[in-house]
Length: 64
Image 1 (cartoon, rainbow, N blue to C red):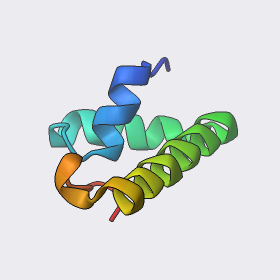
Image 2: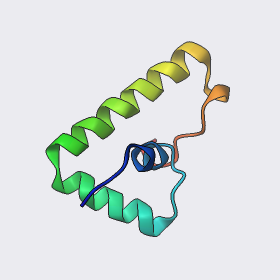
Image 3: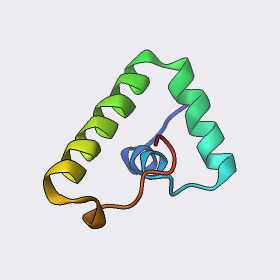
Image 4: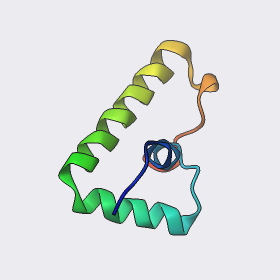
């Protein structure tokens, strides 16, 4: 299953409908490299929130 970079960012930001979120979550569980990419993107967005403030990025509904 292919997941685009745009879909990964939308997943991390909690911007997907439930069906898409579930599809991407299943792909993440099935692929260690994809799981590592999601983790790295999540950490990067957390760092950006810390440095620039949370009001400049979308809330993180998907991963907390």
